Image (cartoon, rainbow over all chains, first blue to last red; front, top):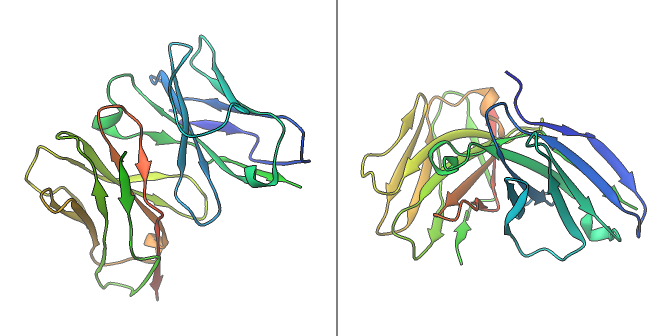
Length: 115
Length: 113
């Protein structure tokens, strides 16, 4: 049973560019959350998607946007990249109504470097 | 707003010994869930142990156990019989009813042979 898969694993972009990161949730999970983890810090919540809609959003600017597809997979888009956007981006999935019971299942993340 | 504080940036322990990681949190919610996650160099966040706030009994998973003090808003993790594979960053995390998982800053644990 595949867990959460993220692509790509590493990415280098230039300031001002746009980037799209992808996530496929664990089988049986329909809720996807995205986190940003700066080096040496804890992950910060970006937003969560359920039923193809943004359910909750953390304290991130509108440059960060997302999408969820009918098969529950999700994309994270970041526009007008800044050097400070360099981080590990983690995707986490859970069955609806049960993240508190089981915690989230995380992928291995995408390491984004902005130069 | 919910906050999670881990006051120990780094801990070092000899193989087979015990180490305890501290975590405090702040919330006005009455029901919530607490977690410890492990993040090895492979980067994947792995769930170590989970505690439900309405349960007084401390959770245990093999060599991992917690000391949950609800009144003090404290949630420490004890790793017994430490193994080299326990070397990782450990994060305390908290979920209130809104399903948003909040993490502490992490504690790097190094197990020495």
